[in-house]
Each structure stands twice: as structure tokens, then as C-alpha cells.
Length: 443
Image (cartoon, rainbow, N blue to C red; front, side, top):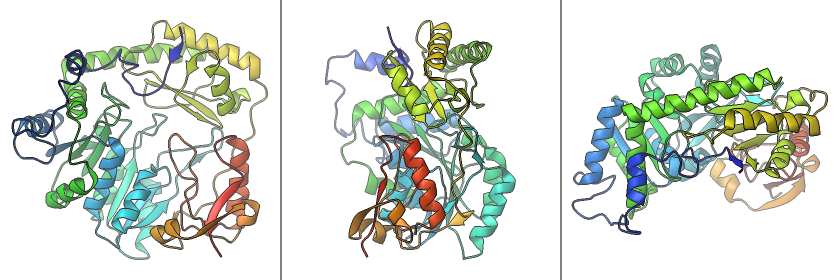
């Protein structure tokens, strides 16, 4: 029997919310309903969906909740469009999900991309400190007003930022804050965030594509938010996915759901102890349900480690050049605490060697805006050139290893010599995911 340690967090059904599992046991298709008057929908004032959203808002301490059926992607986009009118400048972290770039194109927004602390031992971006964010806000303000700030916490690897301090810094300067908390459990609400996006499948027992957008406070115009949701969500939402969003949010605060999450966390903590006892180096994080192996310390590229483990039916979630992330989910597989360390020890013996050399940080400014407007660059006529020949050219498409879809290059950015050399190194570190060519705006 293999070890599926990937998303969705319900672990191929083992950790589904009980209410959702009961629904799926009903006659096939009986739950596939249109927006009947008694059922309603996310943007309808009456009906079962509206009542469920109001109930979830009370449970979580939010002023409003909207379910989504296009994943965190669609709700992040709606949230950003609600915060910023066309032509606005919005502050986005370099570890943003590419869906936010799509929102900038759709909303005619100007992305200000801010750099993040970098760990050369693993090649991972790290959460910004309050001091770092203060420098970012100062740098961004030099060129004019900013409409909104987006933060990502926790990261894909389970590393959390000091959200209360970061949110307070931004709001003191009049900036509303949207937190991409697709990998979290709504803790950004207590940190004071104005908008929070959750994914039912990443940190709760829901199905893929089900998600929720949470609102609190008075900084966000509800009408603008409803309008953006109308633009970006289907007019025929899946009743099953809406039920999944409700069940997942209810699980976050219910005694039974909290108990299951705590039991899974205890398994994760035991697993970390077993791995460290075996001499396996882990990346420090804040989520016991995300085990991040520091493959660089073992002398192994994380993509090669992933391929080796896949052949042995150990399925990780996220391979990167210096790390391999496993998602334990809400119902970790039986025997995980001893089975995974055993396989990781075999991996070390098979592929391990001297630690990999330190990774180089991307040569990026603290805050930068694409030289050519994002939408123009993405729509422009383009040509494919080698990375070496891309010096001085303007990128026409994002360069995204996937998952998690974090762009290393954004359309409209001019590729200087240092950036081209860094991208060439990235291509060698991401075999099969980054080519040695790039699309640039045609001369």
C-alpha cells in the first residue's frame, strides 16, 4: 500500500467532513441542484446557501462569508478586484499565486511586486518580518498611492508570517489587506485582515474547487465585493461544491472537527520526531500537517527525490530543488510515523551525498513594477528565445514551476543580465519544469 501525502487534505476520502461524506452517500446526482428558491446561491439573499453563509460567518467571527466553486483562485481574484479600481497600484508578494496576476489583467491593475527574505540553504522564500514590510511600504509609497496589500500566510510549506503585526502596519497606512490563506485555517481573521480566502481542500475536509471568502470590518465595500464575485463566479454554482464549502468551514470550529485536526497534528508531531531521530533534516515550519524534507541537506534535488519516491508509491505534494513537501491531511495514512521515515532513509542511501551548494537569491528590487503594463505584455506578439538571448528583452508570459504556480518571471518585466543568469540556473535546477527558453515581446 502506498503513501498518498498530497492534497486534497481529505486523504482520498478518509478525512472528508462527515456531513459531506453523508451527502455523497445519497443517490448519485440527487445533490446536483440549481438555484431553486429554497436553495439559493452565494449571491442570493434568501435560501439555504445564504443561511449557511451567515451561520459560518458567526462561527468564524467574520462579518460576511461567501462560498466559491472556482477554488481559492476565483475568490482571490474577486477580493483583489473589490479592493482596487482600474489603474490602481496593488502590492503583491513575490510568492503570490499566479491567479493574482490574472486578476490584475482583468481589473487593469498595476502590480507592485515586493521581494521577500530568502533562505539560501533551501532556496525557499520566507515570510516577511514587520521590519521588512515597513521597508516595502516605504518604498512603494515613493511613487504614489497604493490601493491594497496582499499577504500569503501560511506558505505552501506551512511557514506563517506575523500577521497581526503585518496587518496592523498596512492598516495604519490606510491599506486594506487581503490574505491568501488557502493553506490556513482562518487565523488571519483574528489578525485583523479585511479579506481572507480559504481553500476547503488544502487545510480542511472539503472537495477541490470549493473555497470561501471571509470579510470583516468596514474597509471593503460590500457592493464592490458582490459585483466582483458576480463577474468571476459561475451563474450555475455546483450545489455539491457549495455544500463542501459549508461542511469544511463548519469543521474548522466544531468540537468534532477540532478534535480530528488535533489528532492529526499529534501524528504529524510524532512523525517529525521520528524523522529527526533518523538524522533527516527538516525545514522548520508552523504546521504539523506539512512535513518539509530539506533534500538539499541530503545532497538531493527535491525533484529527483520526488521521482524516486513516486516509483515506490510515496506521493509527495510539492517538489522543489531544495525541499520536498508532504501534506499529511486530516486523516494521515496508517503507519505513516514509521513508514515514511523508513522510505526517506532509503532515499538518502540511494541518492544522497554532500549537501548541495547554497541557492542564489533572485536578483530583484525590494519593490518593482513591470516596465510594460502587464496586460499589454501578456497580449503582445511574442517570440521564443533562449534565456541567454533574453537579456534586455521584456517577458511576454509568466515563468511558473507548477505547483504552486509562483511566477519567477512576470510579463512586462525587463530581463537584465543578472536576472537572465539566475533564470538559467533555475532551469538547470527544475528539469522538466523550466525550459532554457522564454517567451519575450517581439522586437
